[in-house]
Length: 431
Image (tube, rainbow, N blue to C red; front, side, top):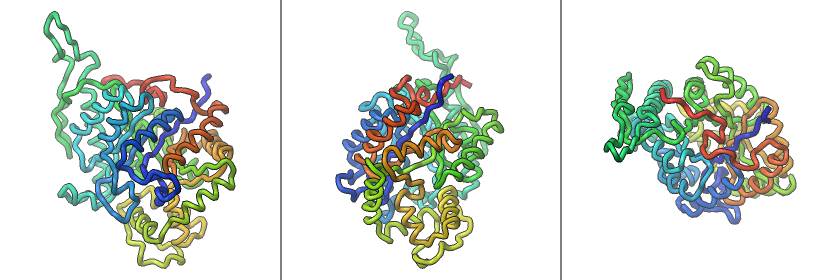
């Protein structure tokens, strides 16, 4: 029996996942320099990561994380990166609220062809309401966004299946290039979307690009359980991660899927040193760059509430439910309650990794912790979120990955060519 192995994704923000990572000595300070992105891609591929995943947003806020405000468009960037990498998967975010199924399906099918089977679509509903103004539209509420997303994802998958694998004949003797019997219209006419199809591009190398999702609310979890291949989760400690893992895996049979059909990757910001002390010193340096202004701006964004009115050294306020960032808010507020945090404590935590789990320690400490989570029902692997680039990633690749490989927990080399191969996913049959 083949030993179960970890999967590793790389969450790529050019200035790092720490809000002030760009200030760390030697760090990249721009997410608009493609040569820096190329270096990140080469390092991740050297580390045999399953995929690079680029998040996105549809608005600019100069007070927010610099990589949120200044960034290359994800599909354009990853299409260019596809020709300077050869094996690593390439995942980009595209909105189901502010996109259209035909263009989305075509773009990701194109990336799959360009990369020879390494494309992945991170399907998001777009949480931040200010995005709507950039499209001249009112921002739909949470429940409506997920209703639209359900139909949107199904429509995109239907468009990917409009072409049979053998529809392109290219018979020079008969003059037949495309067999029209093997290309069909979709003719989707639903409550929110109407799309005729087919695409004007043949079926992609993976059959369907991999679908990624990160929804933390109940509708988001159901959508992911029905449609996703990989799910990113937001956690802060082992018990919480284990409960979330078990809860999500229990949903899969409800949609006729096995519990190993979806790879679950908690986000982690590893701060790696050659000793625990060195790692803690790095984290201390990073935290010394945090200002109340940028951290509070990020808290306000995460909670959908202006946090500047509250006492930084007082208790975390009762905010109630709102329509923004359900997963982040739930995880962070739960941790604040458990540990009796002040608002200042909470914004320091947010600045460290934007609400994700921070793991600081020697390479052995980091590897031990990841192994424990992986072997004890909390993860199928991890979405690695370096605090800064390039050294924050290189520390993980050069120090942690070899330990995981020596323990037989992670691949020594790529065995397949496509992202589905890396994830152990079958190529889907045309429906």
